[in-house]
Image (cartoon, rainbow, N blue to C red; front, top):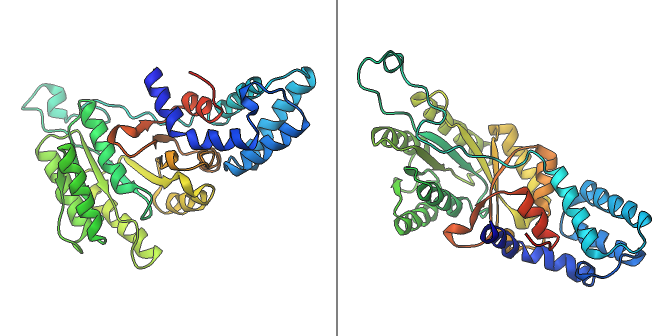
Length: 325
C-alpha cells in the first residue's frame, strides 16, 4: 500500500508543490488566517479544481476555522482531502479480471453436452484525440493486464496516422504483447475485425483496440469509431464492453468539453487520465468526474509501463493535499 501511495505522491508532486508554493507552506504547520485562505483559494483555482470544488473546500475550512481559531494547515489539508473523497465518491472504475468475467456459456455447455467453446474476448476500445497519450496508454494497459495473469491482444486501429502503428508496435515488442496491425491507411474496422477473430481463435481474455485520434473532420472521426463498433458487434453483440476515453490531464478544464463530445457520440463507459505527473493542474480530474459522472479506471503518473495505476480516491485526495499515507 505504501509503494502504491508513493506512486501517487510522486506522480502528483507538481500539483501539490504548486498549491504549497502559492500558500507559502501552509500545509507545513502554519496556522490558518484570512491571508492563507485567500492564497488557498487562488491555489485551488490554479490547479483546476473548479469553482464548485474550490468553494466546498474553502467553506468547510472556514467553518472549522470559526470553531477553532488555532486551526493549522495540516488540519485544513485533511479537510480538503475529506471534501475530495466526498465529491469523488463512486468514481473508481473497477475492472474485473478473470477468463469468465462477462461471458455466457452456450446451452450445450450448460447441459454438459459437447466441448466448451472458446469464450469471446472482452473488448476495450481506447478513444481520444492525438496527443492524449492514448497509444502509449494502450500498451501500458495491456502490460498491466498481462502482469495480472490475463492474456491480451492489441489491435492497431489508428491506421490514419502511420506513426501510431509504429509507436504501438515498438511498445508491444518491448513488452512482449501480441499485436494485430496493417499498413498505414488500411481500413481500421477491418483491423479490429481481424484482431477480434485472432483473440477468439487463440483464447485471449482481452482485446484492446487503439482507435484513431484525428481524421479530416470530427464527423469523420466519429463515423470511424461507430464503424469499428458495428464491426465488432458482428462478432459479439456485447462488444466493445468498455469504451474508455483517454484524456490529457495537463489540459485542465479543457478536457471536459472534449469528454462531452466523445460521450455524446460513443457512449463512454470509463476514463483514463494521463500525464498527471507533468502538470500542476491535477485538479481537472475532479471537474471531469463532476461534469460527466463517468468512472475513472486508471491514471497516468509517469512514463514507465508500471506508472499506469488504477485510480484510487484515497491516494489521490491525500497526495494532492500533501498528506501521508
